[in-house]
Image (cartoon, rainbow, N blue to C red; front, side):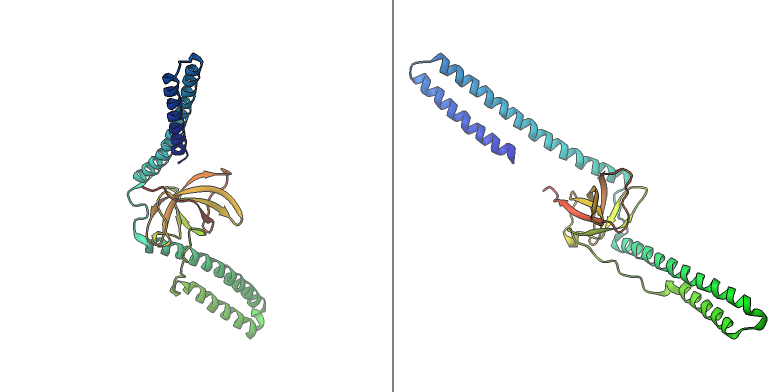
Length: 242
């Protein structure tokens, strides 16, 4: 846009200079005036060349970024999110479910061990209260091991202003966000990655489905920092019109 405005301004100035040159030619020729016209034309020509070079650089950079995304997509397969939204949402829900199971198992196992130790210390006198605590802890542990029968928790959809990483693929490097076509996501959008209130990198959207999308990391402020499930992704720039 800037280069277009500069081109129009330069064209208007060029017409003015040519009109001035025509007036000079109609009147008594003045070598100094003609020389000044030539100098002005040369300066305008140089300005136009700089504007054109800047526009070409911008176009080349955008084309290179798009080509890189396409190349990565082709190398990793046509449909990185193949399997649809259900598989990805289920994977994220299964991960959340597994974390809940681990936490509850740790607590139940610790209480069971304590109860067993108490029972063993009282086993000689057959303390009925100690036996009851062991039996209660064993039933509690059985209940925790049966967690798989519980319904899977829902994974909430995000928005362009506040999406979250729900899973990541270590092999391809793709991050799966909880936004998709329904939330207005489009290929080419860039997002700012942050953990809490601390931004740490940028990512570009490379694949979009109805309820989820996949992004690749473009840059990290700190190379030692890596994206994690639960991190925020906030829209930074819209996708260019195709």
